[in-house]
Length: 371
Image (cartoon, rainbow, N blue to C red; front, side, top):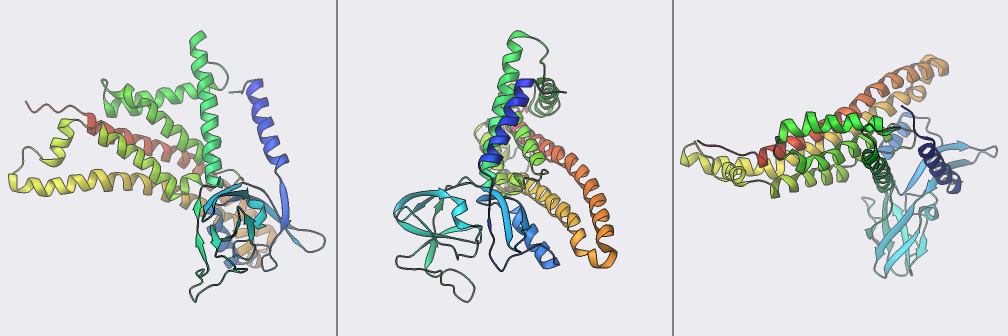
């Protein structure tokens, strides 16, 4: 399938402006350098899968031997003891050890372990205790546009754009054109193979919109996580928890009388057993089901990122044993094939989350006939 000329122009312009207007490079701290040791690799992978206040595209060493870090900043929005403060993350100069102090909104901020801290009045440096916790600084309410938030907003805008165009096409034609031809079979698949069988013919239309949103949101973010941009949105526990809570809210408030009756006072079993079953059912509905949704997506996506980056790191960790050429070739081959598997996993995890959400909703709205 091909994008229309207009769509291609919009996307090209967006990314060109995004990366050219905000691209920046700054010196890294003297204690940092190239990732060339196993312990450096492990630290880099852990840093990659976490959320961040800016984008790190790549690093290099210039002709003067200075380490440069290339990426683009994102807005930092925090609520401190003196109110709202905003500034760009580039002011931290990629420092994550609390050494660079940023003055904004009448107070001072530092970044420590990927968290924004506010220094106490009169403090010029961060003081630490024996466990390396700040003693003269405290966390602030952080509403920043982090890398994950940026990814969520980007995918949300893309979905709104694509599906708005698809809806408009159906007003004038029966068969969509352009990228709509890619979206249509996926929409029909979610409707006919996930929503209808699990929710039923009577109620499936009521929840198909939510299921479509969840499916495409997770799938596109999973695919975006395979790009060199370093997105790991669905590998953030807060994101998967929020998605699971949405499903929990829907099947809790849409559950009918039969659903709650079976949960709280199970028919057809001895009376003495019913309170025990009620506890188990309530725990399943409010803890086990949402927990299974959030952990499955979080664990699989995070593990996929770790495996891919670990295989890429073979060119560093095994260079001494098999040589630079051999390590690079082995790394490329293994990471290439695991990335192909990750493309399948990206779809599979979106499918599983949507399928389980539909199943839980279907169980809540099912009509029970005890006769």
